[in-house]
Length: 563
Image 1 (cartoon, rainbow, N blue to C red):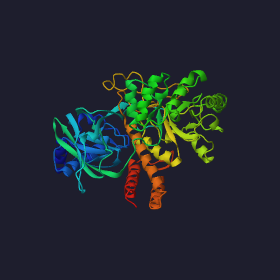
Image 2: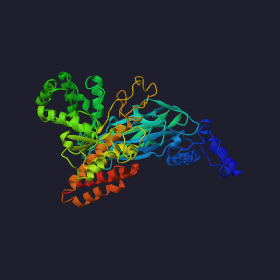
Image 3: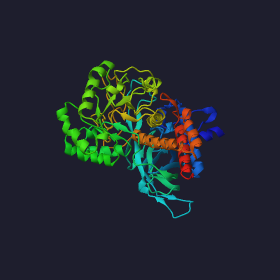
Image 4: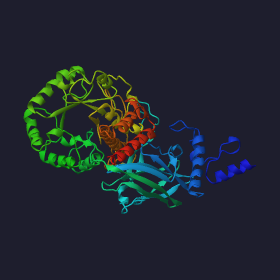
């Protein structure tokens, strides 16, 4: 009899309960439709539902409030969170801990999870000022406008020709935060990001992010932020290049500003023979930290001469790159097409560097100054051969390399696609530091598929399959921002990776100083295998990378006060 009353009470409250002898509870209609499924981790819905109820009640107990219409969850910025509330893998809590340097951005994801069967309407999320506490000296505040909030959007992926843990709605676009409703099985997901001002005093700050709804009581998350006693530069010294649709005009400038704010160069800005437009757009980008740009192709010396003389006179030649004469060439094409054309460019336009994607060939320097190589072709063979050649070694990321032979499985390497783990987008900077890679390139920044002019009012149309020789469909290939322009989770994760790269370089500097050498060296040596083993074998658990970053930041802060 007691077991029956337990079932009745829990279902009446809209919360799952195991019931007598493990009997299934009476599920709401939306839950009934998925009761025979498993989530992207392989967890049966019966266990998802049971655990949701246990965690829901534990949250109520922790905050001392019963009968809540929803609870709050916290997830790191490094785990992609799906829209189904029962699939949520973060913590249900009203506390979050962040650590960041001055002039650094740090984010977390806030999930609003309604009780089963309840719809929430008019949900609003707001942030307070962050106030420094517990330190001597005058009070210090990080204003609320340094906290940026976005609603996480979801796009429908298609079945790709590579392994993926889920086909369907994936989180990626970050949308303007307006009042929203939560229905069905969904959660409400908000990206919360703090940009620590350059002049913020170091120390411990406390702020809140509050959630209100028209038909439920308000809840808040307390954010404890430690600001480390060092600052990051405005631009991290690791080139990350992308192509863009345009190279001038207001829409391009908005796109360029968004990319550059995340340490990414929109190199198409230089592909403009209109010198007046070139000057305006390039000056805008260089002022915001642009490290490289691509020139138009050199069709003939006479037509290219005015452009070359102009960028040389403006002092921009050291940032200029021209693409090689044949994209991703076979060795025969490299020798017969690329090498002769590169020789002409070097003869006619001294100081103009060539970059080219493809495999490594003997005598690579004859055809390019910057070699872009996919991690899965012959990068490791090049390493094993002693890094031959004088060319710079950069990595590039696209759907798949073509006219190449894969020496390792492409799907085991980090990729820049929507339906891949977030840690892949960030860890490339850790790997680049480890292997001494001098730059990176992503196929494109804003080349989303046509037909998305009315997004987000209409569903986002994903890529169509690319035909021979490109081999199929790759979800998100060609864009890391969305129309608007609007940022993506991938863009934010790349920014975080660039900031990690600065930490690693600073640790390398400290490893060269007598007072900090031993401890700095030990921390750097401990990154592998805790975070990665090599380019195709790395830790997909976000906490491993985040724990390592926290240790590096703490040490850099301590070193700032070491005589």
